[in-house]
Image (tube, rainbow, N blue to C red):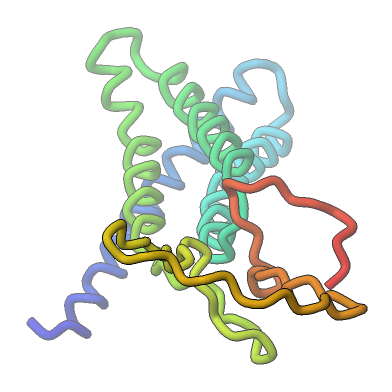
Length: 190
C-alpha cells in the first residue's frame, strides 16, 4: 500500500468515526436538552454549541501549539466541553455499567481522535527574522582556565581609559519569540 493510499484510507476512517461520533453526541445532547424542558430548536442549538465548540477548541489547540503560544486555557475548555458531551451521553443511557460504557463510546472516540490528530503536529520553530542572526540561547561563553604551573603574565602598562565606554550589545531572541520559562517584560525598546 502506498503512502498516499494509506493517508486516504486514514482520512476516510477519521471522517467516518468523526461523523458517527458527532451524530451520536449531537443526538444525546439534543435529547437531554428536550427531556429537561428546552424547546426542540434549543435542543439542537445546545448540541451544535457543545459539539462544534469541542471541534473548534481542538483546532485552536493545534494552531497555538504550532505558534508556540500557551495552550492551558484552550486545553481546559476542550476537556470541559468533551466532558459535557460525555455527561449528556451517559445521562441518556440505560442506568447500568454496560449502558454507561456503550453510551460513552462516541465521546471517547472523539477524544482519542483529537489526541491522535493533535499529536501529529510538526514541531517547527518559527524562523528568525532576516535582520537578526539565529542565536543559541543556551550557549555558554568559553571559559579560560589558568595553568597553575605557568607563571602569570605581567600586568600590561596602565593605559588611560577612553572618554566614552560603550556597553556590550545585549543578545536578544528574534522578534516575536517569547520563551515560556521567562516572564514577558513589557516596555523594552529594541
